[in-house]
Image 1: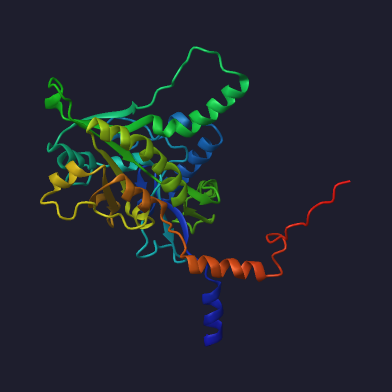
Image 2: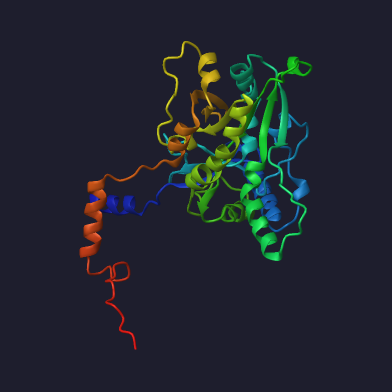
Length: 350
C-alpha cells in the first residue's frame, strides 16, 4: 500500500461520534451481543409506546427505592464519544443524560449523598427527601380569561422545573429541634442535540452485535441545560434559600463543568471548608467517571450566585474594538444585502 492510498483511507475514516455509554444501568461495552439486542428491542418498544412497564430495575435509583424501575424512555444513562475503531475516545468525558445516574452507591467508598451530608451537615447519614414543592400559585379569586389561561400554562411549563427541589438532605437529630437543619440538592444531567437515539436502538435491535459505531450524529447540549435550564432554577431558589439561612448544592459531571466558564471559589482565604460553606450561596459538587464507570467526587467549590451566573453563561462580551471592527466589516460587505439596509428618505405626503 503506497502513501497516497494510506492517506485516502485515513481521510475516509469517520469523525468520532457520541453513542451510548451506559444503557439501562449497564456499561454497553461489558454487555453480551444478546444483551445489546434485547435492550435494543426494549428501547424500540418503549419509543413505540409499548413495554414501559417492562423496564429493568435502575441500579442507581434502587439504592433509595428498592426495585425501582428505569423511568427514562430508551434507558440511556450516559453517552460517550467513540472513534472509528469502536473504542471510546481517550481524554473525552462521559456525559450524564439521566439525573438518576448520580445516585450510584455500588462500587463506591461512599455515595454522593454521604459526601454531601458530611460536607454540608457534618453528618454521614442524612434523611433524604425527594422532589419537595418549592413554589405555589398565587390565586386572587377571579376567573382568568382564555388568553390568561394560555399565558398561565406557558409560564407554568417554564417554571415547572423551578417549582420543586430535587432532593433535600435533613439532619435527623434536628427533627425535634427549634430549627430544622437541611440543605437542598439539585442534580443536573444533559440533553443532547442532533439525531435521535432511536437510530441506535434500531441498529442494536436487528441482531446480536458487538458495540456499533454510532449511527447518528449528536452532541451533549450544554447551553440547553446550563444557561437555559439550571441557571433560571438557581435565580429563583438561591435568594429564597439565602433568606432562610439554607444552602443549595448543585451536582454536575466533569463534562458539564468543562463547558462552563471558570467557577471561582468566592472564599479563597477561608480557614476551613466549614467557613467556606457558611459563606457560600451555592456549593458545587463535580463528579467524574473512572475507567469502570464508577462515579467519584473530584472537586467541591464554594461560591456565590453571581459567580455561578457568570460561569454558567460561558460567554463574555466582545471588546469594543473587536465589536467595532466586526460591525465595519459587515457594513462594507456588499453580499450582506439581507442584513444591511439604508434608511429611506422622508416619504412625501400627498
